[in-house]
Amino acid sequence: MTSFAEKDSAKPSNFLRQVIENDLEQGVYEARKWGGSPGDAQHHAKGMQDPAKVRMRFPPEPNGYLHIGHAKSIWLNFELAKEYGGVCHLRFDDTNPEKEEQEYVDSIRDAVKWLGYETYLADRPSAPGTMQPHEYFASDYFDFMYRAAEYLITAGLAYVDEQTPDQMRATRGDFNTPGTDSPFRVRSSDENLARFRQMRDGELEDGAATLRAKIDMTSSNINMRDPALYRIRRATHHNTGDKWCIYPMYTFAHPIEDALEQITHSIATLEFEDQRPFYDWLLYRLAEGGLIASPHPRQYEFARLNVTHVITSKRKLRQLVEEGHVDGWDDPRIPTLAGLRRRGYTPEALKLFCERSGVTKSGGWIDYASLEAALRDTLDPIAPRAMVVLDPVKLVITDWAELMDSDALLDDCTAPVNPRDHESGLRSFKIGREVWIERTDYEDVQPKGFFRLFPGNKVRLKYGHTIVCTGATRDAGGKVVEVQATLVPNTKSGTPGADAVKVKGNITWVAVADAVPVEVRLYEQLFATAQPGSGELLEELNKESLMTCAAFAEPSLAVAKVGSVGFQFERHGYFVVDVKAADDGKLVFNRTAGMRDSRGK
Image (cartoon, rainbow, N blue to C red; front, side, top):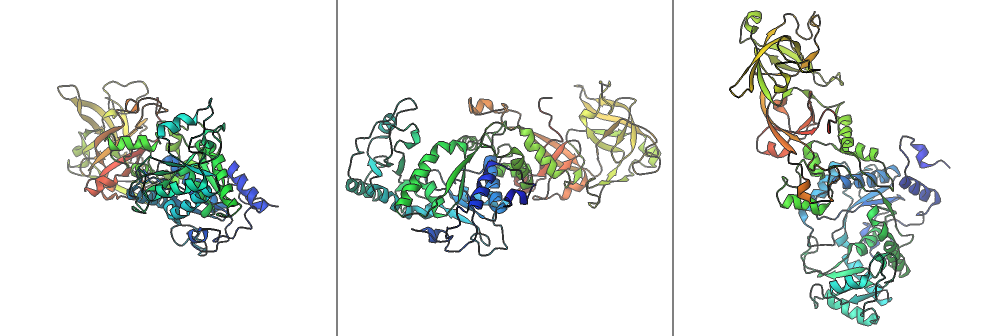
């Protein structure tokens, strides 16, 4: 039998593909009646029949903005579903109303859509979620979860514990010490059911009681020592309002959500590996009670994405935002998808980075340079070029009038929009007596290996003329305020004989006459340490993570718009129009990545 991998040899194999292919070849889910199952499953599957035999899901909690680690999970789940002819759900795990907000729901929707996964497989209108957003909420299942909890109680598999949180922690034990049974563990099913309904009806105070599974307080896996299923929380939920004052724990809700949505392969990162025994325990118990269909979903774990100089903890990212250390959840220095997008990263670059990072069970750190490399590899073939001077000093061609018949005369120059795309056309700009150059392009005395401007040296103004440097003027503090040069006749780029004069230096410039003033923000990593998070968060911050330049750009950038593909500023790297500044009418460019990795050099 031909495997699915053989049908597309371009796709690198990984253990998740092997699992899915084996399940498909063995027909594990062929008996499943998609769109119908016990309990509320038919309702929650939208009541639609679907021939897909693979169902994945991306289940973020709406308590913050998605980050680069989520991008890998989104890419992995949606792409696997697409590859094997299945569907993937966007599901909000909204079981904690104290930390969840509609703002986060909206931001998650926007991020998934931006990555290209709002809908897919539009040629299969019979599949749920292909002609409309394939979207679900854990809170949609709260009624079913409550009934599942009552079933566990009546089956003697759950009890209401009225120990204090401190007492529960103390009796749970640790890795070296087994836990001890709660004194409330011996209650009858009827007593537990009555007490649980009092929790539901608001007759008990927050924290006064917790519903726990009755499994094994001596288990070597601490997660199996009677884990909590429900707690009392008087908090308004963004979706259900004040209907509930008890809320399910994530570890209880998550397997149920997977089962009701008939997920086949539940993918999680390695920190959830120790939770899998409870995941399976719960689904087996609910299947025994006829509440969910079999075969039920299975959970598989892969290594999370760790990138050097990057923090992905939502708690720490929230601290940076709320304490004002960054400019909101979309600050270009933080690894949220909103921040990466504002910085200039594209969906194609992030997907390529995720694919290159691989899917394994072993952890480790990936150098931030790999993320930048993916950006450069995707943008270089398509990004329009432009010359921009970030630290400008004026260069005066002192004999311009003599050779051009007028100081005011401007000469026309052209350059390819993208030299790798011959159909992209040409961009036009002027050259005149005065041009802006980079301050670092001049030295009084030639350093070793320096072939730009110093007295007596010839250089080419890129796409323009060759000049000979004659010197510079400095202010009282010694700072260069003007560089002087003379023109070498008949050396304009693109004209006959232009290459007759050989030079080693080639510098970018912008004519004073048609320069466009712009603000350029040069971003570096927010954290100075390669693996941040182990020490004091604020002490690890890079104090030079943002530098702002009052720059001059060639005229082609005057019409740059938000949402356009990033630009390559020749010599400097890749830049994008800043969306927030554009809202204020300013032309500001954010640096996405340099031309090459130069850290540590």
